[in-house]
Amino acid sequence: MNLKCIAKYTNGALDIVEKLYIETSGTQKKDLQKVMAKLVMIKEELEISSDNANNVKRNKITNKDDVYIVSCYLSKFGHEDLFENLNQSQALNKCADILSIKSTSLKGTRDAFDPFFDNGRKGWTGRQLNEKELEVFNKYNDLSKKDFLLDVKKILNLT
Image (tube, rainbow, N blue to C red; front, side):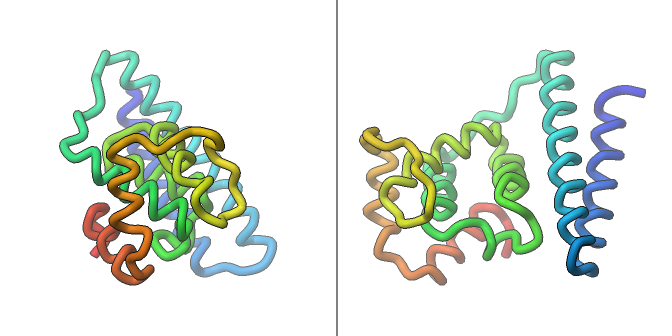
């Protein structure tokens, strides 16, 4: 069985566990969260292994501003309004998949915005925002949460 086939079954299992998560409560919900986190990690490992085995490069990002916008939103407001049934790591992975980037890249970009918001994360303290990050910060910082969320959902095709 090749890695793509295993990844397909892992995605199927993740979908099933996500549906179960919605229907459960209490300790079962916590157990299912752990299972989802492990499945996401397995999925990432399979994708990395598949990429390395096939020497496949990820799609080039056509609009890097989208990555900055999503990262700024995640830093300022978190992931709950985007993916209420996923934990932070799972939401980052899902956003990264949609944007065709590595989740570590998205997390690093989100971390650049963290020092500018009261979100409980330290982020990249002492680092200045680059020109594009600063443009996004200035454009979206004063935007309402509702409008900002709408823009991010459009970028992620969640509308």
